[in-house]
Length: 294
Length: 280
Image 1 (cartoon, rainbow over the protein chains, first blue to last red):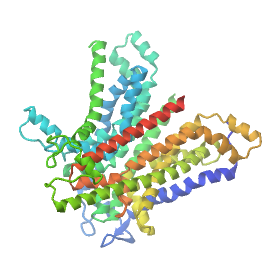
Image 2: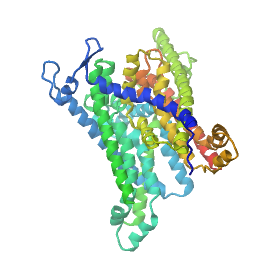
Image 3: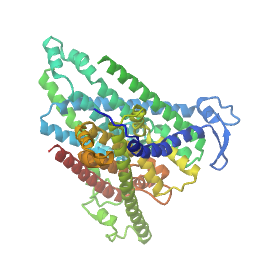
Image 4: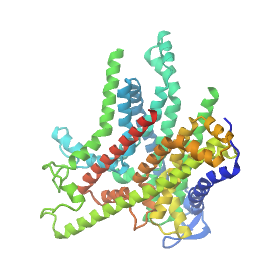
């Protein structure tokens, strides 16, 4: 393909995105980094002087004079990571068999079920979360049903638990896992599967040695797309989680909108950003390796 | 386990999966017609009250009380105002993101320059950045430069990540278009601009429309970024519903939610129809 070199046209085409994302994307990210090293002011403002205690509060070198070290911040960070991993794992377990099933349906049925998976993309996230509020609350659908079936006598606590948070995240993230997985499974080389079976491998061996390796790119893609928004999530724990379901996103939100300690909130967001960048780098390195093998 | 049994198990699991996705939405829809105002999960009888109430049409029963009625009407007003804000934001955002995202896709696919690889990776970042990070970054930025939080800051915030979405969709389309026609146009003496406008853009139209639709839908649905940069005057529909849920659930939410589900089905159907037309 002959690529063009007209620099005036190129400049006009590229200038808007460069200016816009430079000013409204890169600068805000840099500002977070700067703010995370500033001194929190008395009434919610900042003082422009260097201050490393924002990180000291989190990682433990706060001396108790300027700031106090609270292990709870690291605990919440690890909990967010754990919730993210759990969400990814559950989405994988749910989506992999279904993607397999859908991929083998006749054309019309396949399109129908793909439409059903994609439809939640178009519907409001907050509405879908709200549905779980109705289901899980003490007088909600699930408790009422269980009581009517005489499985339980008193409503059990479902809402405001860590399980509710993970359930809510799985529910909103499931389409994001499904589509990359489906694409990978749909691209499977069927003849390799048949060859493996013909050569005497059993179903388990065929799955582990032939099918799974071919769908690794889809698994990685889906996992990254699900993990990143899960770790930084604050809406799901806000709506469905109680104190035990608090995630790092909630901490950031509190620092910005109620505690008004922006530098500390920025330091916490830097943690989210580092996790995201680490995951992205790992995934691209893995993808490059896979690409190199092919 | 015989293959047949395994196949049936797979089918049953899959149907449960789809039940898991859709049952919660069905529950909202069913309960939006329940007249019980105290415990909305206890079925009383069928009513359209919450729907007519949304548009200020219903005379509520005595159980509401005069004081609550004015409160209630006020919240209806706020909701309609939030809907208007959402539509305005989505309209502006879609326009800006579509123009900028399309221009970027053309530049990266049809021109040779040194930073191309950098741009290709960079354009993915705004999509991958967790929205809370982008939200607080923009909040600090706007406050630091002294820009008042308003509908303008919401539009700017939405554009920062929606440009990337449009870019991805248009990029996928442009990669499949044979540049031979454009070369012919250039050979025949058309300027670069004329070639872009008269030859490339018409072929790109379905991709651009698809990208615009996606941008519109995501903008209408964005909660987190808007939540941080909306300010007090301008609230969008998702932020309004989020606030309502936080303050305590009222039966009207079911009706609003049902209407939103209905709207999403219509939009998704429209998108599907567009795709079907494209392949014709």
